[in-house]
Length: 100
Image (cartoon, rainbow, N blue to C red):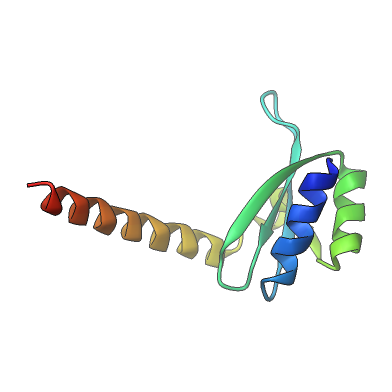
């Protein structure tokens, strides 16, 4: 994990309330990742490489870490994604109306 990623995540956590971490398993395509989810459902994802690094990151950020395969993603994250989709559709419709 790069120093830039760590600095980004430290800043991200410091600007948000109720952050929890979810460790995502390694796949054929991706390295092991951590998704940080704030109280309002906003989230960010970074590659961390190993489970040991994910645990250390949680300790460094004072963020509880969960295994997403055991807990699943929190509902607030799905709700946030749906709100973002709605806002994007509205913005696209507004731009389409303006271009006519």
